Length: 259
Image (cartoon, rainbow, N blue to C red; front, side, top):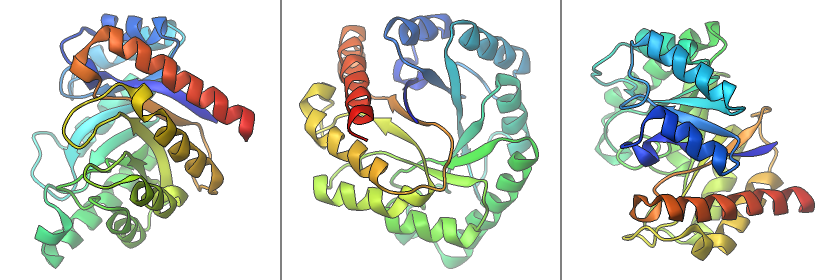
């Protein structure tokens, strides 16, 4: 089932209470909480409080958006990230596949990332928490093909990937990338860029309808709910966010009617 959400880092300057209020007032289903500001790694008391406040507002904790980079040096160990996610009540942790793009990564470095992803996938599985890869340039998920190669090499049933529109490619290429990652697709980050500037989501409405249609047309191994979560709002403006949220809700509702 498709649901809507907000990535908390969209409004890093706002408190957790303000983020919850914003998601609730705009009738979204859940929140992906970021580890850099709102739910710091290791602060378990805060994580429990934020999780409880989210659920008390009739919202779902979608995931814990961490900045853990597999196979690289990190400020925190993965077990600390995992215990924070458990305290938050997050069903998944978003992580990054290394700290360099595929072309700049040696075979040994690539293998180190893959091994670490298998390790953390296993650790998280023991806590009934999934691991989701950030789909992003300057990492080993810098294209759909590279993402699937990595997932196949890791070969762990607890490892999935996000998707978002890659900057610098056009609609047909984006649709093709969806088709490639769809079998292991978890959640989606929603925004509208023209390669340089952030734009209102309504201006990309037709394109996003095609993305959602493509996602729903392909059988996925991900059997739970999938969240389409707003990120990168134009001018970081709350009024614009309200408009974008309405567009996203309408897109999801329209999609339910046609599938």
